[in-house]
Figure 1 (cartoon, rainbow over the protein chains, first blue to last red):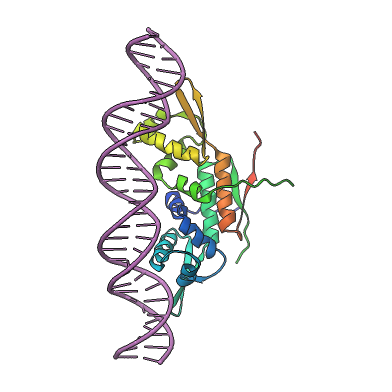
Figure 2 (tube, chains in turn yellow, brown, purple, red):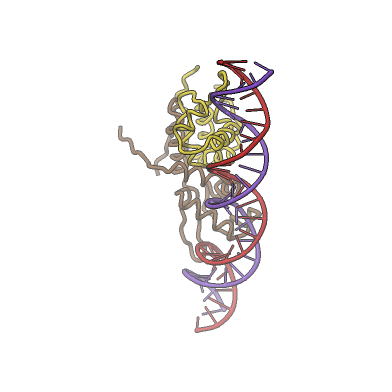
Length: 106
Length: 106
DNA sequence: TTTTCATATCGAAGTTTATCTATACAATCA
DNA sequence: TGATTGTATAGATAAACTTCGATATGAAAA
């Protein structure tokens, strides 16, 4: 069985998650591509605030982005998020086996 | 199959994890009972700082404590930590199935 | 090219957080 | 009881973070 270990900075990972607005953004762009303004429209915060949070999520590797015309579309990297969760569990709860059970290939 | 859903405040959970000193404390008392001074001795921070972080971890449900004489022993609640990780993955990465595969009963 | 639209960056204000020293509290020991 | 030991709390300070308005940047449209 081949095992690939992903190196994660668990502090940066946790910090990226540790904000209510960021969690709302993550929930919004969890399963779809959204522009910055799409997110602004659905939250009660200003556009620079959303950009700021997206940057933090991006630096932590939790969102991917692509330009489409004038817009930049963001989406949550679910796989990476799940990997981060698994690593935290592995690092701190080794007696509890937490795994990504089913991973549907692209 | 009986399923028990644990209600977790994922923001509080992530905030509890989002500090380097707290992650060090978690790693230390992950698999054993340690007194506050045990932890102080192994880290380069003052005793009140350790108490402060233990309180945050306790409020998040991530550590359990018990008094033994003058000391108070702390240990990480691995199960709860693993549950928190699973819930974050479930909430934000529903396409990735993250489960506690094996859970050894007490 | 100029204008418009979408996003990023800057700088400031207010809040939260981490850390320390000093001190209070709680349990044991003499 | 009084002293000692271990932990928690209080208060202060500095750093980090969130948020905003203003503005810069970059791409597309006129």
